[in-house]
Image (tube, rainbow, N blue to C red; front, side, top):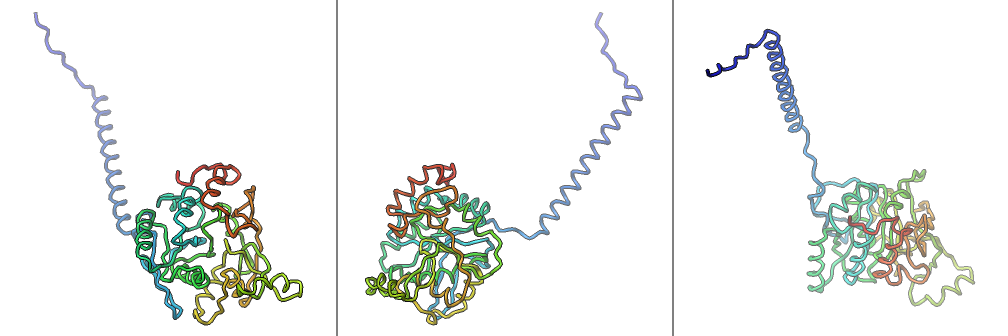
Length: 337
């Protein structure tokens, strides 16, 4: 005899539970729906933030010999704690390669992370040349790494004071910074420690920060032989920072920007030239020995072979060697991870 189908009768209590669960589910759906609508309205009403990681980081800057600057690739001054311009040239491809393999990230995301972590923006700063092959090679490097500031000024060693002034004017036009740092491409740098140094509170807004030395007033290369004699004779010397790295506060750079290019004295040496400007502006000199260490220490910020060389004596090799040492790199064997 076939079994009759089993019939399940729902009790009033189970019907109530079913109704309650259905109502709860509907309520949850309603809440999520309202939340989604509100989120959409708020998202549309808020201003859209630019994704810095997607924007070109390299920029060409026209230097007007009458005193002005013009920038390309940006509509407003970016706010960072400090802008660091790594001065480089057409013959320094190997140096830039070593820097990107050590203390400076070689890709856009890494540069952005470094900027967010330290408040420091970094760019290689280079001028122009009439050599078309060199310019073409530079454009390929710019396209690959996108980490340059290109100045419309001839890239020559004798032109370094003019290039330095052009750099500070261009950096001020593009970046709203507390400090503007000039660094050479043949030093080993710790960006994290540089950030801590620049973040310190200072009473004087006009600050010239670097590893200071006393240099001669006589800056003509033909008079180099006279320097020791001038010192013995008590000739006037003035304090200025070593050239491989120094920083100027925003107030100081704004004063430089206001000057016409042909209204200030240019000497043959870039570091002496800037020191003379600072002497005339009566700024506060802040002497920081950790910016000119001959070897890595627990507090060194910039390492170079002082006094043997004006940077690392063999920068392409020495930079890689330093980076392998934990006391130099802080334990990181690469800046690109």
